[in-house]
Every structure is written in structure tokens, then in C-alpha cells.
Image 1 (cartoon, rainbow, N blue to C red):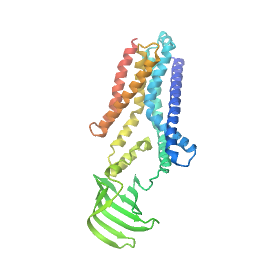
Image 2: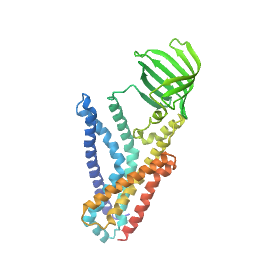
Image 3: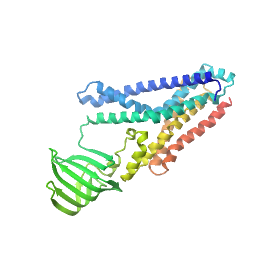
Length: 363
């Protein structure tokens, strides 16, 4: 830690200024690119430009949040390059400040930013993503098929053969829905009949309902103990298990409850647990990116050519991105424990950066 409060304040202010500028640049770029995509989506709808703009404002913060570790990497390179080119690093060294001390302040700031993002901004961003999906989903042409997991069970709504079907099950066990009820309504939403069963095999779109019982609208049972009743659905086991495909709609503070809910309903909570570990590791990921940016600049032999740093930043971001995705895939396929698959890339980057920083500190 640098003992001078003036130097600490100056480094903090300059680094935060670079992070803010980089964030604004990426926000504007993301907003423009996403706006074109939203305009293309709404080209067949009679809506004004305000709807695509509003949706872009809802979507881009989440995009920026997911890209933030790489944004911190670019910000770190920008900042350290700035103080290096302006000979500020020389003035700091003359004052007895080492490279390690110069990197320490941005690292602490990145850790604090990461904690604030996860604890404060993430719940807000998750609400924005959910609102984005709800608004955009209301314009989808196909609104006849919906599915959700709640504390009351698994619910599925679908329309077929002019009838509205509402399906409820207590939980998912293997590839079977347990304690299944299918409520059928006509086009006027008048109750037609109900199908009850202890379980249904949903390994394909043709569900095999075992020991089914059909109850008519007057409450009379028309059929009972049907050994195998075939029901054609729009959902199979794969589609139902992908209900939480967009984990960005789940707030950090809700992850524990969602994990418990999924496990109680018979779903795999691996993706949700990976999301929890990624959230916990986020501040450390930012710190490792700052350290890596310090390695690239303070120990680099490049002098005047900014393109060297731009190329280095792009290549590093791509390699780290795919390294993290590869490790995450190993966790999702049970090749590695979830915790190891999330923390291993960050730990490797941190160790590599720490060794580089120690080397740079000797210069």
C-alpha cells in the first residue's frame, strides 16, 4: 500500500476515470449494435423507435456486466499505459513507489467494484433482463406455449386441437413427471375434462401417461386405470430442463432459493450452482484482470506502438473467454466439480499474473 494519501487518491481517481470512460464507450457501442438488432426484430410490427430504444436500454447493462472482466482488462492496460507514457511511473519510482504498489490500488478498487456489482447492481440488472424478456416476448407470434417452475410445482400451458391445456406436476423424477394433472379447456376457457396420473414418461413429445384417469366436467370418471395413455405435447424432457436457460434473470440474492427449488422439483441445479460460484468469483476475476493488465504493460518492452497493446488485449480476451467457457463446460458435463470448473481459470490467471507482477516489480 502506498503510504501517501495524495498518491493513493490520485491513482484511484485516474483509474476510476479510465474505467468509467471505457464503460461508457462499450455501453454506447453495445446500445447502437443492439438497437439495430431490435429494429430488425420489430420491422414487421407497428411500433415506433421508442420500443427498440427502451429494450436496448434494458438489455445493454447485462451485456456490459458479462463483459466487465474484459473491460477491466482493457481499462487496466489503458491506465498503466497512460502513466507509463506520461512518465508518471518514473516520478512514482523516484518517490520510492514500486510497480507492485502502483498495481495494488487498482486491484483493491476492482475488488470493491466487483462486490458492489454483485451485491447491488446484479439484482437490478436481473430485473431489467426479466422485463426485457417479458416485453419482447409479448410481441412473439407464438404465445400458446408457456412453462414455469414455482413453489407449487411444474406448470405448463399449451394449445392444441383448438383446446387450451394446463398441465401441473409436483416434480420431475428422472424423465417422469410425478403426480400429473392435465386440465383441458375449450376456446372460451370453459372446463372440458381433467386427466390424472401418478406419473408420465416425457422422454419424447409423445408422453406415456401411466395408470391414467379421465374425469369429465361434471365430475364423473369416464375412464379409470388406463395403463398407458398417450398425450402429444410441445414439451419433452430436454425442453422442460431448459426452462432456466437464461440465468441472467435470476438475482444473486435469489440463487440459493432457486437452487433449493430446483432440487425439490427434481431438476439438476448444476447450472444454477455454477452461476452462484461465478457470482462469488466475480470480484476475484476483476482483480486477476487488473494484475494481468499490469503484467502486459509495466513489464512490457513495447514503447510507442499502441497497436501492440490493442492486439495483445484482444488476443488475451479471446483466449481467456474460451478458457473460462471450456472450464465451465467441463463442470456442466460432470467432468469437474462445479466449484473447481469456475475457480480454476481465475486461479491460474491470478498465479500467472502474480509471477509476472513480481518480475515487473524488480524493474
